[in-house]
Length: 564
Image (cartoon, rainbow, N blue to C red; front, side, top):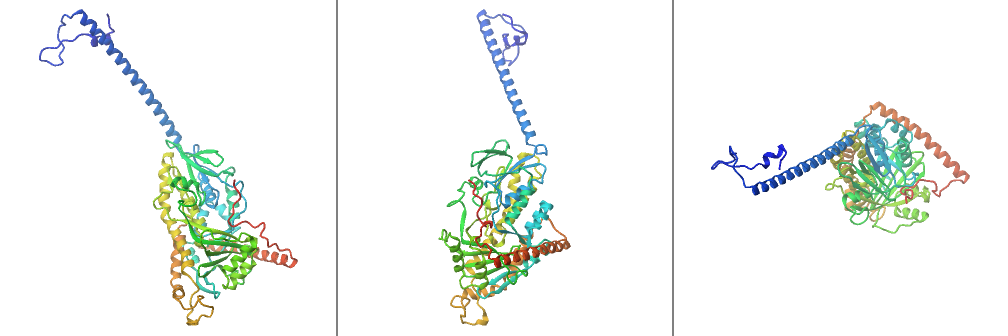
C-alpha cells in the first residue's frame, strides 16, 4: 500500500533508542506483516481525523466571517448621519410632545414621527401659562415659532400679582418677583396663550407628515444589537424606531411598562392630591384689568385664582379640598351653583366672576401628581419619558408644560451629538440625570404651595380688628392659624424671589434688555386692541339680547377629543 508523501511520515513505524526520549532510530528494524497492516489502518484513521479537523476549522472560519460581516453591516447601519438618521417616535401630541417633536425636527440627523391617540386635533383646553423659562426655551428652538406665538400671547408677569385676602378683598401679599427674576436674566415676562392656539402654531411648524393620528401607543419591545424599538399601538399596528419618547401624559402606557406598574389606579404611583379644581372663562372687565396679572384669593380649605388671559377675558380656577370621588353635579347650572356655594361668604369679586361665567364653560377635574422618580430611571435602553408621563405636578406654579418643554429641549441637545445608535441608551440615562433634580424641586415647590394654600392658609387676623370677630367665628378672628398667616406675609416675598429665580435660571436663549421692552410693548398694544374689541362685541350682544351663555363652541378646559 502506497501513501501520499504528505502522510508517509505519519504511517511509517518508528523505533526509539533505549533511554532516549523522542529519538528516531537511524535504521529501520524488521516488522511483522500483520503489525504493518494494523499500522496502516491507524494511519488512515489519523488521516480521517485530520481531514475532519480541517473541515471543522473551515466551517468555524466561515461562521466567524459571516458574523464579522454581519457585525460590520450593523456597525455601518448603526452610524448616525443625515443619510441614515436616528429614527425617533414621540408618543403623545400634547404640549410637551409637540414641542419635543418640533425641537427634534431642527436636527438634520434625526427623523421624527409623532403618534397621537386623538382621531384628529381639535381645539381643547383653556389658556396655558408659559413662564419666562419656557419662552426662552421656545425661542432657542425656533425663532419663527416664537414670533408667531407672540401674536397670540398676553404678558402678565410684569404687572401686579400676588395673594389676596379672600374675605376682605385686600391685597395680603403682592409681589413683583416674577418681574425682577425675569429682569435679572433679561427674559420676557411670564404670560398666557390659549392652549388651542399654541397647539395650532406647533402643528403648523412641524414638517408635513410628522404626526399620525388615531395611534395610541400601548407598549414597546427593545430589539437586540442596538436595532431600536418596536412600538405597538392599540389597533395592533407596529412601528420601528431607534428612540421612543413617552410623552403620553399622566396615565402613560410607556411609563407603566417601563416601571412595571399599572398606568392608572392603585399601584400606579399617581396619587390623588386631595383637591378638585373648577375652571371657567368669560369675557369680563374688572376695574383693575390692565394693572393686575393674576390674583390668588386665599381662605380656609380652598383658594381662587383669576388671571387676564387676553382678548378681554378672565380665566379662573377654584381649588377645593374634597375627598376622592366626591359627588359633584354634572349638569352645567348645578355645577355653577355648587362652585358659588363653595365660596359663599367670600369676596364679592369672586362671586361676581363666577356669576358672569356661562354655566357651560365651567368644568371640574380631580388633581393627581406623582412623587419624584429618584429610584427609577426615566430611561430604559432606547426608551425615555418626559413631562406628565413621569413628573406631573400641581398647577400652582404653572410649570407643568414649561418643564415638559425643558425636557424636550434637553433630549434634543443630547441626541444631536449621537454618532452611533449604540450610544443612545447612555445618552438617555444622561438626560434622566440632567433633569431629575430640577423637576423634583419644581414638583416639591408646586405641591408645597398647594398644601400651604389649602391646609395652612386661612383668612388672616388683622390687629386693628382686635379680638373681635366682625366677620363671624372662624373668619379672620383671633386664633392661632389666623395669627400665623397674618405674620407669614413678611416672609413670603423673599420666598417668592428665591422660587422664581430658580425657575428662570433655565434660559437657553437670552435677550438684550431693550429687545424685551420692545417685545412687551408690541404684544400689550395688540392685547389692548383685542380686549376692547371683545368688550364692545359683548356689550352689543347684551344690548340686542344675542349673548350666548350656553358655553357651546368654547374649547373644553380638560376634555380631549374622543380617541377610540
